[in-house]
Amino acid sequence: MKRVGIMTTGGDCSGLNTVIQRFAAGAMLRGWRVIGILDGTDGLIPNPPRIIEFNERTLPIENARLAGSILCNGHAGAMNFETSAKCGRLREFNRRLRESLDELKLDALILVGGNGSLSLAWKNKELYSGLQLICVPKTIDLDIPLTDRTIGFDTAVQQLTSYCDQLMLTARSHHRWFVVQSMGRDCGQLALNAGIATGASAILIPEIKFNVDSLIAHIKNAPTDYGIIMVSEGISLRGHSGKPADMIARKLSAAGIANRTAFPEHIQRAGDTTATDRILATCMADAALHAIENNETYVMTAVDGFRCHTVPLSEFFAAGDAVADPNIPELETANAYVSPDDPLLDVAYHSGIYIGEIK
Image (cartoon, rainbow, N blue to C red):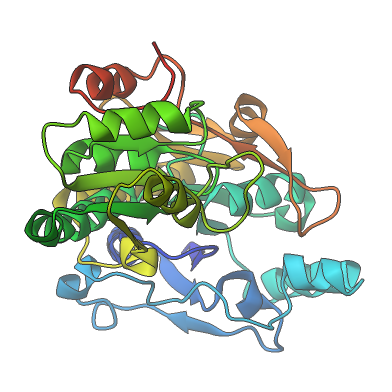
């Protein structure tokens, strides 16, 4: 009988409970034991490790749609890769993590995480030797190389779109523009997709240069005197500091354009998981189960068009733009960004949205 573990790490998003439930259900159908590791790698540091064993009663299918993770993703102040690196205890952390994995006697481990977690897993692959490591990509940022979609992205787009839909009503009532700051870190996919869905008048993302004067002219010449200006949190404005939405709002105010800023923050990571994300989570759980059956290891589940398959973690890391992690010395994270030839950029431009200086 196989003994498999599953844990969720990094930032929160919707769809985590779906992939946990679908994977555990499939594993139990195969007669495997399923161990849930609480709080990601944080849960491997205490002695004994913090775990639960799943059965048919502990994973009701109706809870699979809920946001968050039944296993949790870690907590502030716990010893993990980042905190142990900062205080010079990384070797101790790695030793304890390895000891816990040995104690659990796992045949395979499913790690559900973002690009930081997956990069850490690959760069520290010796910690997972002796078991099959299968990674499942989740993030609202859609910044993971080699997969067209990540678990949580579609729900985040829907959450941000719904938020802007409500703002649009009060914007119209007061003849006012709302500068909405989205999450996404240095990747503009969330802002781009939600901005198009909302019908934003302008979308500013880190990957595309923009001109403030052009933005102001676009807003002044708009057919309405209200609307949404979507700003990704990763943009910068030379000579200015502070939150990106505030910086843009100050420029608009100086030009006589009535506006307010809005920060949806963590509601983008919340909300009942959309059907699209549930389907994706189910497909990725199924791919992870097949990967275990096929004796694969150090792989990531990925979507290419309509096909869900696995790719080596080495290819995931090599395909991304490597960026130094500011919190963990000598670690680089593999990142994906909005491509200059992304068709949505042309869609936005031809829809009359200011998308930066792309033409």
